[in-house]
Image (cartoon, rainbow, N blue to C red; front, side, top):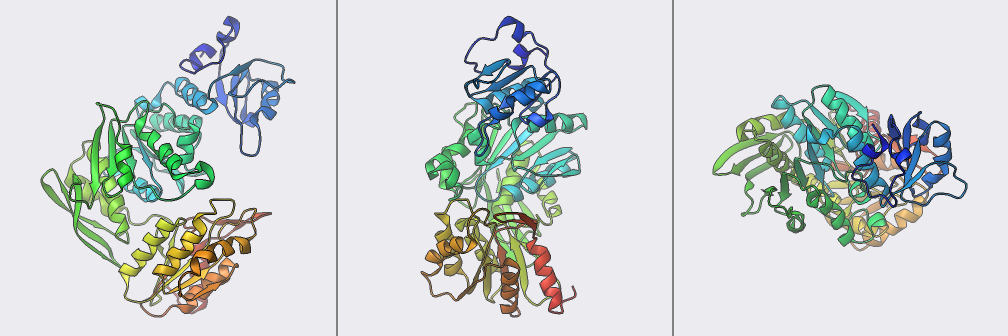
Length: 491
């Protein structure tokens, strides 16, 4: 492929010289360590490192040119192509290089503060049950035609998405499901991608350390629905008022509204929630179907409806969709039970915002008449303003709270906990503050009596803890199981 073909559609600061435009390109990269002869290297400004630092190294490895939205460094010797937006340029170039796989593979993009991962798993379950060969890009893991791969980012760079889609297509894949984070949308990682279906779960306070305001956070989410190009279908949560701002402003886009609201076209009724899971009726276009799911908590009704709506957008029959839902038995770290035969429930959940924590505690409350013991912490180097709000949520809804450390990163764990205590102390709920997370989990389990629920919140599926000077192995589920075993529960 010629360089001019690779950069077709990219907003350039200057016209390419003829000799450069005719250069043959054999690949593209944003990591200089992976550059080979004939590649084009894309240099981005980073939060910690300026990609221009590696431009000369990329050239030495055989790159034919460097593309960046930053000006050429004075010491750089080689072809430098300045563009209006670096990551948008990479997204366009990636689609060009891989011949637009998003126009052949049907893309589903899911965004929102909470529920993305569970919804993605449910959608994958529904599509696979209908015989589709799927790929999934998400927070917990990537899946490609049944093969599981580690997930370095919820939404990878555009180049990685196009590579993934191309590999999926080569294996006979038909559908790609992607969690699309607000960071990815703001940075342009899915710029120009063709989505068949886009899903909005909800919008609550999160990531303000990156976006600054809720308005900017919502605006980032909106990009998935606004395009260009606009999606063919939008599946929107009628119970969240922000959804109205997500409606695609394009005559060719169609919308499915799901929820509990009376005006939702895809609606749930007669909900029964218990230790064994969920049962409810779903109404759509005058039809009624029964839904059963082993997933715990009423909050999953919304996630299931979103998955049903997505299946409908692909022309699947309502009964076929609802019959597939029970096959999604659990999502790692999403109110995941740890069962060693104890007389109380221990559940591990990824809740790391005040709204998600409220939902998780309310789920715990709905499952038992016993006490709810909530353990949580807040991550370091993230939005400080949500810390007291999480403290308030835990104290208001729990019978006992264990405050501990999450991923402190570069911050002092005790300083983070002090921020949380501002909100936690507004209620009379008894609590213990214990920065050692393993010891904190033990304290929470020791407090439990038959019929109680111990909610271990914050890290969910994560198998590590990020400290100031190192990252260590730490899995809430493993730790809880070991503690239960030490108390004599054998499973």
